[in-house]
Image (cartoon, rainbow, N blue to C red):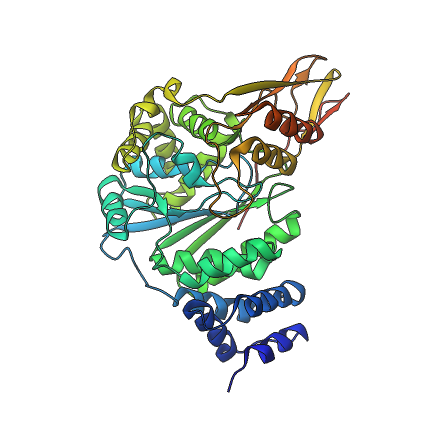
Length: 435
């Protein structure tokens, strides 16, 4: 008879868990028969000792089977899901979902997203900064929107990989979130359970992500691609830079506004480049055309207004006011606006994503615990990017908050994030590797 304490001890000794033991653990997590303290103990043992590839694949399969499978079976067509491993200023899903849907090539994007915790932002929080939007919809409504619009962004169905929901919540509060096997199993179990035919992964690398080094990012990317291949799902992993924030805005409404700018065809160049690359790979993975043609197709949706229209249609279907998408002046403004100015002249040589993310959370844009309220108007707008010249006294960034105290505290962290040097730094690419 299997006992949880024996499984914990076995992993603490660095030994490989077999299929029966992993299946017992996941079943106990799902039905609540294993207490949180024992779940935490095994997660910590895995964090220290790791898992073999076979263990990780077994864990992924058991988590996938913990709830309903192929919940999007009523959507007839090619279903492509995109997942980011999390970062600072990452509003990509708000952009590429509309782009792929607007391409009108029979490819559907069912995006089940999450909320922000700590220094990383949540796609649902950003979308809900538009008045009236409710992303907590039924599975039936989610499927209906995907069928009719070609994409949908909403909260994860509780019927989908429920073991992952429980494990993720415990990992967040036990310091075990940054464990490669657990990240891989979490990401891939949801994608496999949803019934997506093709998967495109945006694996972040740098200070503002779980993978701080290229080595870790490659390990995670290759592991998830192998899991996808094992389950007969075409999977592409794109490793991207997260040493600095993505784009110029970090927060909720400010990031949605920046996403709108990209969809208008006049957004940040680096962010636009990444979105085009990811969207093109989604069409390419679905065998729509060769990569160059797929790139041209998604680029066109930014300049003919069709992608922007798709986002407006989603906002309306989720109960929001679509006028916000066409007139961003309607978004609520923060009570306090503060400016961070440069103490010396030079070139911006570094903007640490982690510190910027912490600053944004302090301003009110993030939450320290699950379920906490956030300020949708709080955030940071970077006036300068890495490589830009700045003069003493010139504004580095604009901070938005509800109180002066929050603005001052956020400014202290933001000040530490920016490095000014005498020499212009070498240009760094946003796309680091494709696996």
